[in-house]
Image (cartoon, rainbow, N blue to C red):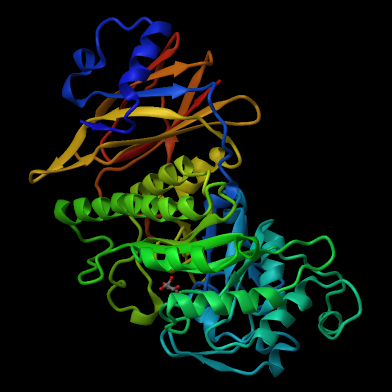
Length: 522
Ligand code: AHR
């Protein structure tokens, strides 16, 4: 059995004082029984909706074809932006969108992407397929996209190959209201009011594609660049330092040590769920690969905990947010597609990775204030695929839809006892859970069962609150590699979950294999 908190035993005793439990949970459910105790009166931290954020880069068909089709396209669009994609993303209330990269950000020169489109210079997108970038999607188009989506822009500036002046001018162009060279240029390009962009990344992966810097060198660069990214008017920039790669704890350590915390609102981290030596197919896999991917996903949680421990040492008051601004699965590209476009299918396995990750990030919401899945449309762990005028949503999309109830809700501490999912003698915790309380007083419980074969009975004890009604939604599939295609776009869709029975302060249900359940308690 995996024990989520050392305090579980104490909590069980406490719980027994409040509820009548005839016999222990193990007696009732056998080995496969999971127990969740929700401490509904102990919520303190808010789950920032920005944990449910997104990332879209000039990469493959993410921007071009994914969002942007141009105003002359036959595909229904508003000012060149696809209506179907905007509608789908509005439905899941995406809180933010990070752009223009990724690796692309550190070779992007924003001034090439403003003014009349026909006069914009071209460039080679050296990182992603070596294709010609015509800069037709630039600052104004991105800000228009954010306005249509009703989402906050997160802009990542160029440290690797750009200048301090260039980055400083971009902020002035976006945010200054008065008379100035950049504000005047913005007006000349058709935008009177400043946009007031808040979230600002100072470079991306500067240990690698963003300049191959040492952490010491980058820390100094950050101090320089951040100094000239000014606050204009009421707007306060939220400056995000380019953070570590996966388990590079030294990077986190050096940045926390060398950058004054008043200059750095967020420190980023990138960690993909992948085996870089053998990424494997997104759809064609057996249980060996299924287990491996979920194991890697769970290991990321341990690694983030170590980054957080370092941050806690330098910043016990948690002033600097951890911004997990690239995460998700990374497989081999689909056969026959451009290797530089990172297009991969998306199955129930990806939905489980998303649900596990979001449950974990909710639990760490005292430090993690933003996260961005890579990438929203047509790239890596996408939520949406487009093909010409067609569009579909993936299993990962459905997880973001189901989990949106956690946006800005209060995290409720819980204790979890879970059976193991065993594969060839190796064990993983089968069940993951997270709980929050929303503004209307509803409690939501997100439960994940990664065991591909076994259903798991769960008993939930609700401490410190009463519930009269329970309803639910489930995402479950025939197979672990079930996925949506343009021929069959509804192979994986959520359905109503009627399997939960409420009995006083105790809730019983059985979670089917490889499934995600969201319960609502009124
Ligand atoms: O998301 C794809 C790439 O992965 C990004 O451009 C880069 O930041 C990361 O290495």
